Image 1 (cartoon, rainbow, N blue to C red):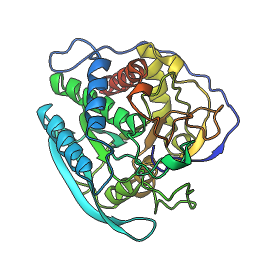
Image 2: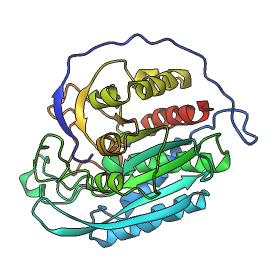
Image 3: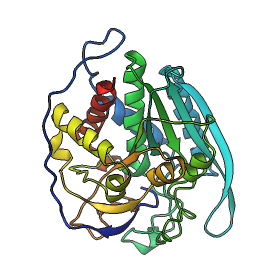
Image 4: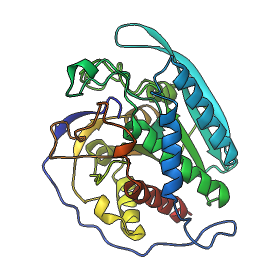
Length: 325
């Protein structure tokens, strides 16, 4: 997870929500919301990890970029690679690539789905000091979210919904300063890909009805609280997604509880483009960081990826997509 720095932890606040039945009405010949295949999502996650850490400026990063573009195109998405150069916290210039896949390009009613695809260049939270300079696999923090979105893309390609869908894989989310925190409202060392895209969208005057960011959505027994900034900028989207989770049968993964305030890729989307975008992100109020013990360590590997968690998130997002008119 990128510059997912937890600004603070709020008191647990419970929300009352009204249940409603799922609208299992598909489009273009589909009779129901498509079934998310978590085995496929797991395989796509493993494919990314197999390249090695996806750190900008490495061969592993380049190979994974080609893989993501190839997968999206194979699922019927029009693809764009947005390349630019950004400066790291120490001033070093580095080339990055945001990867965009668009389905139903002629449809003005669109949903934005996004995740970061890069991985942390150093395991600065690892308990072993000798390991802290090593790049991490980022199986949960990066690859898992992209794996979920690739399986969603596959299902959308098989059964087009009534809305257009844009999938964005943001780069350079996770290259923040070692043990660095956020300056208020400043993404300088984190979230560089999303911040660049929000200022230079791949399509002129780009707009979407709403956006959903996935981050660390494949951890074992993960839970997804209502993230603070998501509630500030897009409470109606949070309600929509949490309602869909219950309709899909996965409400226990999405407790109606306010979590922490997390600086993540959804903030440039909200603040610079004005698109209401929420963050579905693992939150563990019992851990020191809020993100689990293996966050930004070498233990963020495939052993910590759960097909059950990926199923809960992927099916929920599909429910949201196919509920839209």
